[in-house]
Image (cartoon, rainbow, N blue to C red; front, side, top):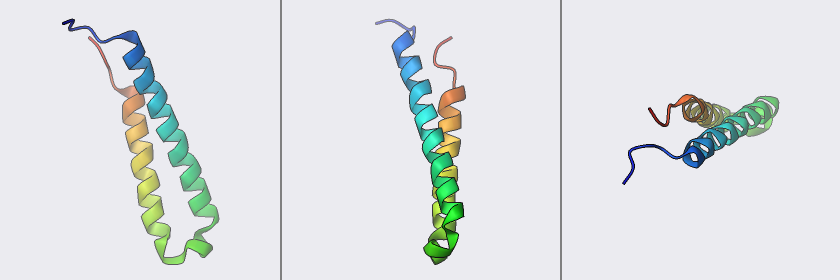
Length: 66
């Protein structure tokens, strides 16, 4: 088995990170714009969107191979 990471795996990881980051941004935007409708759940959704943003950022910046 090879110790090298494949190019496709690294590209897929970056792409998935970009998707998670975008979903987190859109979720954060829509949560902020509809805070009055969400009422007590606004904080919960903000935390969930921030988690998506952080995970997406980590996936986009992670080094996949040496």
